[in-house]
Length: 518
Image (cartoon, rainbow, N blue to C red; front, side, top):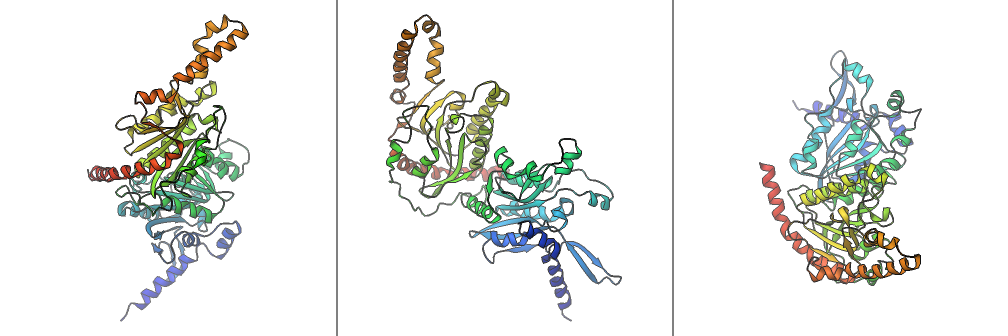
């Protein structure tokens, strides 16, 4: 009279699912240096926390008496787990079953994992490895379908919960979309590729000769193009990157980022800050060293380090509080703003504004890059979009001008409306244009009328005069900069400011909640 036979049927079907695509397919996956979907989940989540959903989904085979013979499982593995003690929703592609093809995935299943994360306001983690659409399946279905999934709330979830994605093998078509459409994305060097269309599609379209999939969409391409944020050296490294990213952001926009117990003191003063900016204005310096000396020790987590390299974007902590941080890198275009760097800034500002991360901007901005190629690239458009992103943000901003602040790009240092808290180091200089080039242009006729010796001496006199006019102390006298500070005091002042910043963030969370309810 019991239901034991049916319960045993559940167990039998579950074992089919746990077999993935069969021993040969699993062995092939391992031979290519890649784990199976469930092996990946085990390494990613807290031990014992995985709760799989939809394990019975798939295509079953029955004999003439309707007895179960075999089950080919769905190639989507979904469920919930904990990462660092926090609940997350996970969707993983199983490449051992029809190459993780999106057409064979039972779309209702992976979409359920995504919508579950959205409805229950928990972070989403995608483990992506999908060969995209399948011509064989189109043949079996007897026709094609219009692309897209109306029940997949892809855009909505980006405004509510943290979405992370790891490309762990070939990610083609829908797989490429799932890998790239995230707040934080990772590729594994050498074993993952992200492509709108694979090599056969590219070759058939007459867009090139036979091409290797890694040459087409490897991490060396897409972590530099801006499609994917970070490059991992192994699958385990990729899991660690996602874990670390999630530690800085809240579960949803309805919560605040969590402060950790500080392991660093606000009063720490680094003598190296007094001399890190060279007096020779054309000389570069290592901007990341400034972050290490000012922010909480070992808290800097850089995002998209290989794209838009004129600017460094990272998550970090100050006195235990999570923050977003930007700093220019003078080793790349002198730190000047071009379109790739602008797009990187715009994306990062949107991330921080979405998840209530106050922004600290260390600025050494010589301006928007100029020249024929710069104009073709559309750098001015990029600069305009960054300024717009800053002004549309509602998070608290604190700007520290460490050297230059010029031109249109120079106005992208912080929100100009409301309280504009701006500190400057004594090395700071600013203006509509850099004085060095502007002097020569302004006095061209006068200089051309002089002898070479007279011209050289006159330029020395003019530069001395304008160097004084460019002094940040003259700006401070008019209170057009909040304060000029000893660089060694930067950490102490930021630790004081971050307390005020987090005081007003609950109000923003409340505003977001009211907007969502409407």
